Length: 146
Length: 76
Image (tube, rainbow over all chains, first blue to last red; front, side, top):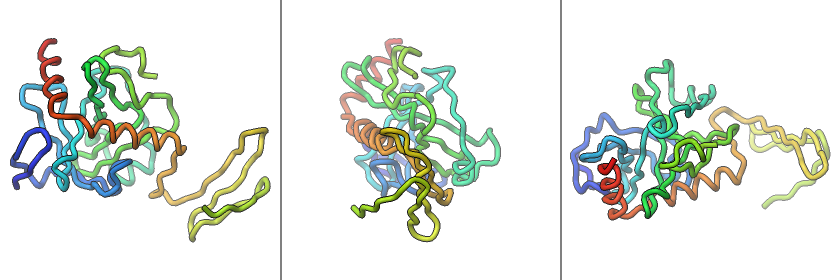
């Protein structure tokens, strides 16, 4: 199907790759369908585009590119909700808050996007019990992670 | 907001399957135990609000910023 997107104009998407967030995201409780789009000429970042609202999209990235020792424990409730059976089917992204200048941009290590790549179920997983920042620096590696 | 007064070790039942219990009162801090189904997410309020605000800020990026980001990462 064709989808009007916030950043990339109209693109063709594979409906079989739509990710379901059963309860939306914090602040966007009704947005339950997203798709991950690659950015042309940029491997470091992707777009998490709402399928239902073309003007809603997040820039996301792989947190391990910026914080190599990032770690999180998925609790049993999350494993159950996303029907996760094996570690290999889990993908973790973080939402980027872009700022001008770019060096002030941050990533949200406190609430990563956890996906089951097999069932295509996703959730923004808020880490209750650690000190990762929701505004960790994108450019000053390590210093503001905790 | 419904307001109920509870003593230590007393509970509040919400619906059929949520219980909130006062476990300890230590000075200004109150320890609360919550029993709820696994499908119910429980967060400290300020943390949840922080994530809501970050999501809103992240969603409010203009197209120009995206171009800026592309330039910056190409520079590397």
